[in-house]
Picture: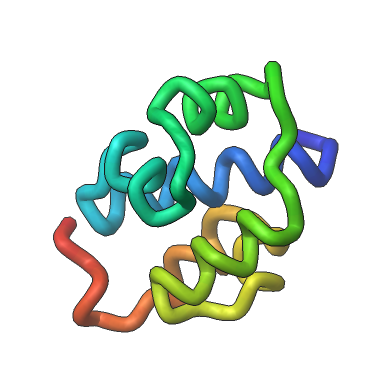
Length: 84
């Protein structure tokens, strides 16, 4: 996970797990299809900075927390967002 894009995908996966959200949930938040979220999570397509801003606002964290890695991203989550 040396690349920034890999770190971002790991952060998003960790936050999804922590919040109990699915790719379909993220697709609704972003206004895209579940398939597009899947492609971004597998690295076939890239997450945009706008996506990061929208997801971070949705989860109540700073976009930089997503870029910092999964530990920082999950620790930044408000208690009200955490299900696991």
